[in-house]
Length: 406
Image (cartoon, rainbow, N blue to C red):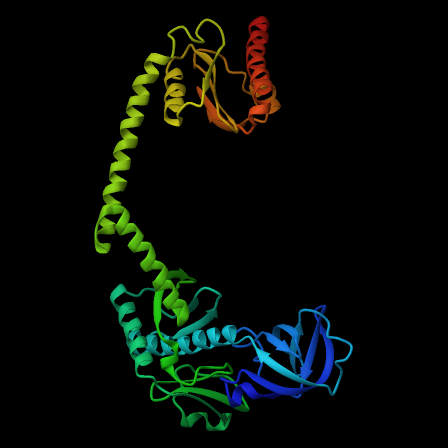
């Protein structure tokens, strides 16, 4: 068995050890040691990374027999074997970050229990946020803010965090925030005078090292709430990024940071008004751009070049108002062709033929219903001329054949 030095001193960054076994895990080489400061994945906390005798350790896990396996990026050199002494060095940034996340989660779960009477159901320590699922269906913004403030108060008080072992028959002597079903030897983690739970992870020695926690999201899952938090250095980085974003936004709007939301709302309303104005003008312009006789006596086509989306839409809808029209409208773009097919209700509609012989051969995408169908043909400038010719020719021939049959 490997001696877990991380339980003796969670702040240990290096150690010396001897190799007890070389093995493979899921196709990767792995090393077992007689002692290690590398924490194996467990309790939602990822396994440690770092180096062993300059071999890169990409993960640390527990084996089925309880051994600790250090998975390597590459096979170890031939001069390393069972009994070889090695120096172990943690990827301390990675380890410290997750000790912040784990310890911060304990503080938050304690605050949720004390302030909101919310039990922690499950926890996930992600690469961006820590999520805590709680046994509540709803929580008010003010109550969540109180939980956050309570957690940060505990951090400011810099309470000691300690871990100790008891036997299962001693459990009745302790009041745990969350009951445990573990048996035998049980490891308890205590935030002195504040929180006590069974946990096998590694934690910071004091709450002050967490620095900060911030609630950043909430969602409902399985009828319960999942809360997302930024903890530790992640919370500070999140603050820096948001401060930069709001400062840049206030500069762009020439206002104070607190006025940015109102300025955005005003800008959104101005944009909506502009869209309405553009749409109305496009509809009026379309009245003049669609010739009265277009597609009435015979199927016809209308080609446009790099036309505005609103105007093209207005043109197609204007053309579709006449029940006697049969018109193919095309709008040539740099990387596609917009198409619209107008077949007035005054004409029989050979839908199957138009789909098979007009739309499918040129790869036209889209749809609709009488009297208007529209979509795009994803084609570059190089192939547009041929696609346009095929499209128009097929459209006219379908109607010509239909006329002859009748």
